[in-house]
Amino acid sequence: MEYDSDQVPSLFKSIKWRAMTVNLDMGGGAREDATLYLSEKGVKNLVFDPNTRSDEHNDDVITWVMRIGGSHSVTLANVLNLIPTWKDRDAILYYSKFLARSNAPIYIGVCEGDKSGRGRLTNAGWQANLKLSEYKNAVANRFRITAVTDSMITAVKDV
Image 1 (spheres, one colour):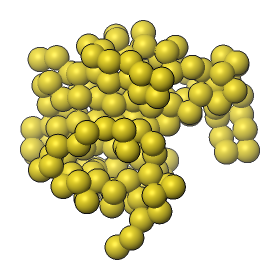
Image 2 (spheres, one colour):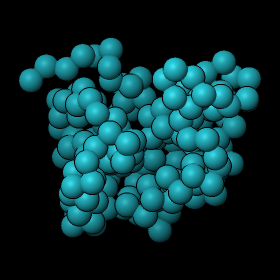
Image 3 (cartoon, one colour):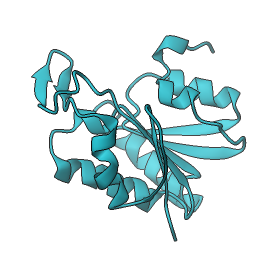
């Protein structure tokens, strides 16, 4: 099965993936492009997305992840910027931490929008318009940050 490389979030392309691992793709959307991309790398990608996936699908993902003792990694690709409140962003980070194994890397990328810091509703939905660096404190509340680049926050779940 082929995928559209343009539809794979750039976050996925900038990670050095380890084969034979399971990634939990929080808010991964309806498309399978990232899942197909990761399968070529030997990574099983499980998409959890209450907005675009059925309750049954999401329940199956949670069950799978819990059965293996947590995911080996978690991705939040252009997810936090779509959530209007810090409380709800923290909830996604909390669940990401809960569903990851100890020492699992968490990879976070956002679409910064116009970088004004003023969130607004667009034709595509909510956009926070925050720079990636403005998410650091929220991430640090749940994880130990190990690296920050222009395009990604990498953190790890401590024991």
